[in-house]
Image (cartoon, rainbow, N blue to C red; front, top):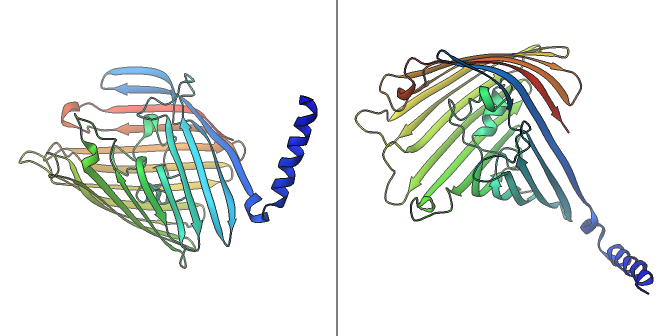
Length: 340
């Protein structure tokens, strides 16, 4: 009897689904991910280490449902993991992003833990990846978006918005509380707002971004206050030059900087399956009135297919803090990236 009831139950379920409006049945979910691994030789001062390094490998799912009338429900979650060890990313959360949202004529709204891969993007970081080209990879030995550009990306407890596109212009915004709030660190008393205005038309891309932090009772000593950033990129065909400049402000003391300037100038050159990237950048050291972090990187990328890349890079990071005076870090690496 049990075996007979199951086909009947399945038939009844399919009949019910068939009676629903067509718009309520149109849904899709995609599984995706990236494996990023390099073998690096990293020299810090006079010490050298050879390592197999994961560079922000991830996997996730994302999807949408057509609700009718031009309205869609959006959802997704992405996990970070170490492809070198198989362990989930050792951060405060293994989720890189986890969101639910709606899109329509008004634009896109998303709620949750948001980064640049969510449908609303990231007001500041999305500008960085639209204007500049990273050396492989945008994490691990060559990470610059956080250490030099301060382009915060992944935030929890967030509400994000992406406007419709108006003749190549769009606007992004994000509001979020920082952390869950505990007795030892009441981060729920701090709030951040990020805004980004972008233009993409023909060969030209432009970006203007702003971010601000506020804290109930005032900012802590040397805590980030606000920032401006501006960038431009021009596609000349084989070569795409670009530049970004920014100024970050802090609640400084007499011995630390209140304004921190940074810039990056670079170019991407493509010839067939080969791509070359060169970046030169600099950032003032906030903890020092005179210190500057100077950095350059070069890379070669060969597209073995649409999903697989062979990569070589060199990254030279100069003195970047008062605690690392006269110590430079140079990383040379080669590896493979595969998207699925």
